[in-house]
Length: 86
Image 1: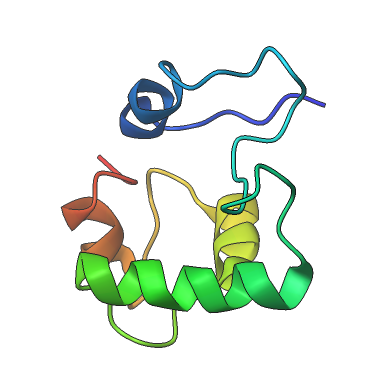
Image 2 (image 1 turned 180 degrees about the vertical axis):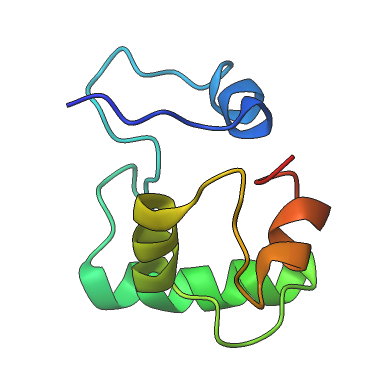
């Protein structure tokens, strides 16, 4: 499967070591995150980044399926600020 990504994300992922398999999000033990653990970490990372509550992994997946350069969503200004939309 091919999933296009924005330039900022591609630049952030480029230096990561992927020689041992596909995932780049690993826990402190170098293993895949459990679902609930990853959800909790997403909330933690959002808070560190100053992203408001309510932005979730589910929402990110859903958004990526619907994003377009002509987005008119109420969250489009945030997407533009974060470099997701032009």
